[in-house]
Length: 166
Image (cartoon, rainbow, N blue to C red; front, side):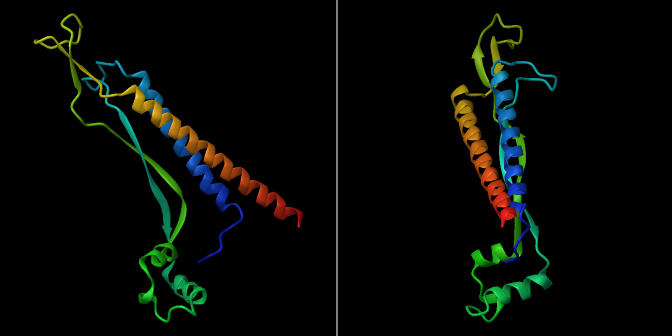
């Protein structure tokens, strides 16, 4: 496995910080639009759902073979003898997370309110499927994940600073 630069941990933590900030913004928008029944696209507000994907880069296979054999020379004689776990970490170089989101495409919740301006002919209003309790739990989770990334970033910064003293 290749040794990376001294600032790679800081780079990885910064992608996590950015992703969690975007996740908190999505959650805040969901909470703010809990009662929005009319949007420019038409219909009720659609909840934003956040998810993350690993941001990894394929390592050069020519260099990988020599690095892999040098690193695990005593244990394996051929690359095809590697376990899937070892292949995953030898072939990819993890470099943070990518933030993605999608809109909730489930049916809206229908509430009987014939006096509402957006009520249909039967008197039902289409309301967004946003649950405040779920959003608050997501907000707490995002906040804790943000704090964990800050802690990792500070630890990497302290190690880099300590290395400069040597």
